[in-house]
Length: 200
Ligand SMILES: C[S@@+](CC[C@H](N)C(=O)[O-])C[C@H]1O[C@@H](n2cnc3c(N)ncnc32)[C@H](O)[C@@H]1O
Image 1 (cartoon, rainbow, N blue to C red):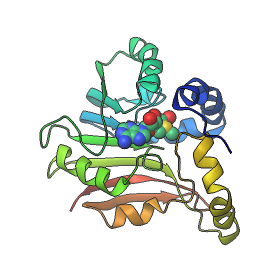
Image 2: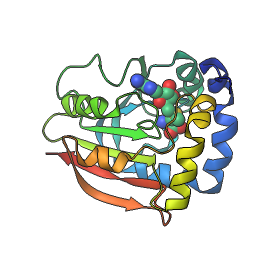
Image 3: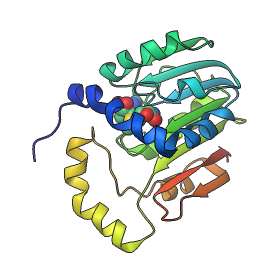
């Protein structure tokens, strides 16, 4: 199967995602962003679908390594009452000093960022000892049949979804990182996780 180029992925992302938000994900996004306070960094901000849901952020910096996605986030910044900066950067090597942020938010991005374990350590560095991580990710299902399907179609999915690894065990990655789970929720099938973590 041919790989969908990143530019095309950026064009179709909202077409695919906005209906998902209408039928359930919006609620999850509200919870993801609502508790992020102070100086907030969102990693892999994409087209900025989370921007309208920040209610307690003093400021927001959104980073993504894909300029096509960032360009599509710009109208959402204009509509936001909050000051938002967009920066083209790689989550594994962020152009910010240590402890520059109070909270970091990551939504459906750890599945796409290569070597997400390295990214989690970099997020710990830029949030400092009192930092908080808020996450919402789809993960390898705890249902064996679904997990098998994720394994089987994983390579094809990766090609059409901008590099998303559908069968990644992000819960294990979080547990092995410098972050310690504070709140944790998983969907019934275990395919979606949400929560917050604090620095170990
Ligand atoms: C599935 S999208 C999620 C977008 C957004 N967070 C949302 O909830 O709709 C994943 C995003 O992660 C970004 N990404 C992938 N690898 C990255 C990296 N190494 N550094 C920064 N962003 C990255 C992609 O460009 C993409 O915009």
